[in-house]
Structure formats: structure tokens, C-alpha cells
Image (cartoon, rainbow, N blue to C red):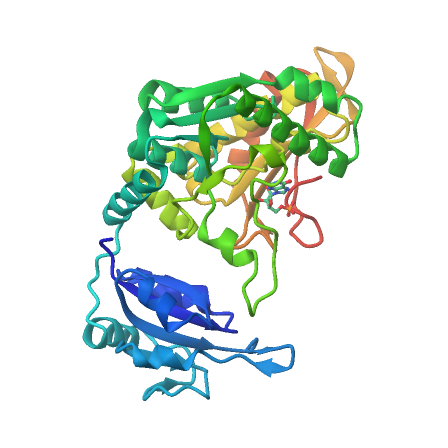
Length: 430
Ligand code: XMP
């Protein structure tokens, strides 16, 4: 391993990731570990140069304040503590130290080297994956999202043709999205890629289903079944690659913090199809995943794409999905994305998309009355998707998008702009 490491011990702080980020921003790798890690376990971690004991408001668990194992003071490593009154450290900070203090700790006391960068990270992970996988095969569900794309590129570099990627097109992808996955991974990176066009199967299962949660359940469940069927056709697979990233692990809960969401694990694959997991991105924050993708040569668009829900356009074609409205969502979304890119808004706005409701309104085309669908435009900004504000899109850009949708998308006679922040609205409509 090339990187020096600072270990943060979690004693109930809500600021663990903030400190980890700040240390990584100074060029030193850092990991968060549970408060009760033993001296032996700490010694087994590679290149640890120093320890930060990070206390905080959640230090009392089941009526008792958590403590570190005393032996961590005997490892001969520099230790500082933050908001941890019981610490035996010489230096105790009441609150998060500023960058200058952190710098002194990292580079003068711990003598850490600022060697955390994506080149070194990739070199380390390639070596670790090769060691783990040997000459066996790895299976990966490649959706084309940021995390699965970056993990695919890394695994291709590590094990080449031993990686088998499966891309399931559920028919709810955006325009040209599946084509781009095939182009990048099969044609350019020469991945061993199985492309499954399951559009008809998904649309069949979804026919007449209007309840949003039911739609999500069907899409998620069917996805696992298609993937499972492909996995069964393959022989000699021992590993499953996953684009798990650091927030997934942290949000799954720690010894002091409650679970935010369940880790989107392989959950759902049957018992006899359990593989050992290969998760080379599991220590990276999202922006580091993107930097890793760029370093691996993935296209900018793929690495910096806006979030896209797993159920895809299925939750933007409101109510029971029909082919004509699904096409209207897909085409209008493509126009919106094109015009946002032209106006430079693709780099500014966090998420933007179109929605087609399942009711019609009256209009006029070629002097005749028409009764057609409407397209709703949505463009929002947020930090964590928990709350969101509406982008104040320039009127002329909106006008251009509207005119193009009305001229180019069949069966649409009206375009609206959604002005609602979250809350009370959610980002998606379903
Ligand atoms: P809401 O609509 O809850 O969306 O404000 C918050 C963020 O989550 C995305 N989203 C989903 N992502 N599966 C996903 O993978 C889903 O079922 C799903 N529903 C919403 C949404 O696009 C937004 O970024």
C-alpha cells in the first residue's frame, strides 16, 4: 500500500466524515473506525501514522458513555482528541481543529506524507483486487450510473476479461443511455459485456400498474430476476463486483450512529448465488469516485452525470406506464438535457428532468382541437437531496425548451415548469 493513513475513532461524533474529508483534502488518506477497535486491529491496518479520537453528542449509548481501548495509547502513534473529556491525550481539543492545526498534526507530529491521490489509489486497488480474485471470474451489474461505471473501469484494469459485466436495459433508461454503456465499455474498454434488452418484459409486468410503490417493487424485483437468470447461465463465477461507496457504508449505521438507509447490498439474490464481494470503491466519497473515473479514462459525461433513480423514467411516466407517454418523457428529457448543456446549466443544476402526467388537456394544432399530454419540467438544487430549491432558469432557455418540445415530441400540447421546493414537494413526482 502506498498511502499513509490517519485513523479517526468514532466516539459518537456527527463530524467523522467532515474530519475525514478535511484530512483527505490535505492529501493524507483517512479512515473512520469504531471506538472499540483493539490495539492489534489498529496495528494490522496499513501505514497508520496517527489517531484522532472523535467524541460528540452520541457518545452515550444505552446509558453508558463509550470509551476507546486503553492500549491504543501504547502504540507509539501521535494521538489527539476532539470533544472527548476522558481522553488520556496530552492535547485535547474542545471542537474541530482548523486546517492549520490539522496540518501541524499531520505533517509535523505524525510525519505523514501527502501521498493520497487517485493514481496511488488505483495502483493499490488494482493490486488488492488481483490478490483477492486470482484467476477467478467477477460478475458486475453495470447500470451505467457513476458508481457502477467507475467500479467496472477499475475492475477491467485489474482483471480484464475475468470481469463479466451485465447491463440490463429495463426500457426505462434515458435516450441513448444503454447505447452509450455499450459503446464505452464494449467498444472502447473492450469489456466482456453482456447486454440484455429486457424492455418488453419490464413493460409487460408494469402494464396497468399505477401505484408508485408497486411500480418500484416490480422494477426492482424484475431487475434482480433478470440479473439472476444471466448469472445462472454463466459458469465459474466466484465474485460479485459492487459499486459500494463510503457514504453507503457510513449510512448503514455505526456503533454510535443510527442507520440512515440500508446498504444497497446484493440483497435479493438467492442463497445458492451468494458470491464473495469485490468493493474497491468502498473507501471513497462521491467526488473521489468521480476523480477516480476520470483518472481511469471514463468520459466526463458518464462520471459527472446527474443522479438518476434506479426505477428510471418509470417514475417520471406518472401512473400506469404507456408506451406513448414513456416516449414523450424520453424525448422531452433529451431535449431538456441538450438545451441545459447548451446554456451551461448542466454544470450548475443538481438535477433536472421532465415528467409526463397521465391526463390530457385541450389544445389546438393546425386549427383543430386536440386533446393531448403535457410535459412538466423540473430543475432543482440541493446538497443532500433531503431539501431542494428550484433553479431560477432563464426565461429564454425555458421558452426554447418549450418550443422544441411542442414541435418535436408527438402527442404533447402543453409544457409547465414546476416551481415547488422540497418540502413540501419531493424531487420526483412518484
Ligand atoms: P425524492 O423524490 O425523494 O428524491 O425527493 C430524492 C433523490 O432520490 C432519487 N430517487 C431515487 N433513487 N431509486 C433511486 O435510486 C428510487 O426509487 C428513487 N426515488 C427517488 C431522486 O431522483 C432524487 O435525486
